Length: 172
Image (tube, rainbow, N blue to C red; front, side, top):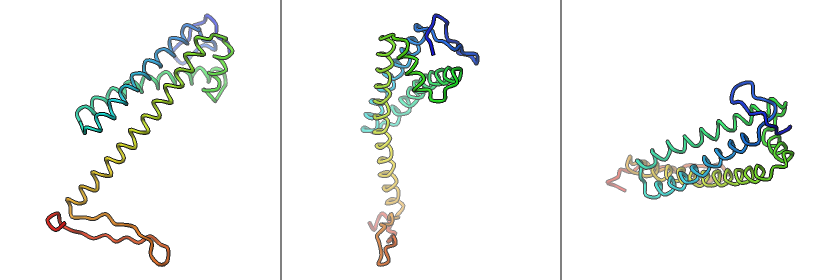
């Protein structure tokens, strides 16, 4: 796996070698997309806190754009790895960068991996917020419909037993 002056192509016939400038350009594009995604994730969290559906819709569109860019880049790395006969794209890419002895590429790649981890962590937090909000709204709808969610308790045999009751909002 070598970095040479041969440029990478974005088609099906990707070359076996990558130009360091092209690799840096790909990584820089991913860094930019990750930073944009992190900003969007922060904005998404704030929009969920204030329950702004309009802002959330706009933010989701931006997130999709950033994710699409990252996905295209990941596909390019995958295509390159296939030309190398390697299945583990991440380790092949890391090996190629380490062998290049290009400190700027290695540093940029390390920064990208860190940003990707931050994106995953923020996305997980936002996902938990969405799940919690869905649970709260579902419970409120059940109350409005006059349905109590069953409280699962264990009976004498150790099996879960529900004890649901129904009440109208006026009786609650």
